[in-house]
Amino acid sequence: MTSPMDELLRLRASIDNLDAVLLHTLAERFKLTKQVGVLKAENALPPSDKQREAEQIYRLRKLADDAGLDPAFAEQFLNFIVAEVIRHHEKIRSEGTD
Image (tube, rainbow, N blue to C red):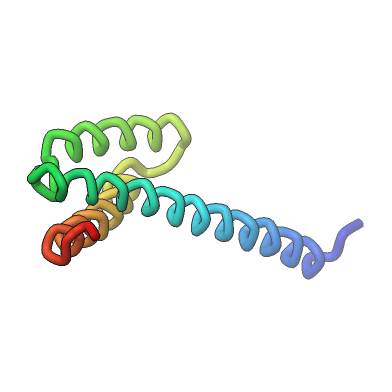
């Protein structure tokens, strides 16, 4: 039988692994959104796309609900990420794409 402390350590190790996956996934996502920001800046497109954002919120709320995650939390999480992406896009636009 596993002791409670051993089980706690096992669970925490799994959480740590998932945290690493989340961070690496976010890093990959931001690499792609940087490319989008450059493309937008080069083509005089606005840094934000409200229609795309609304579609993403709808899609992620549905995914969250299907996964048993609070859709409101998923929306807050996406809004946080999108705000950072837009900030990056605005910076790319103001500094140029060179």
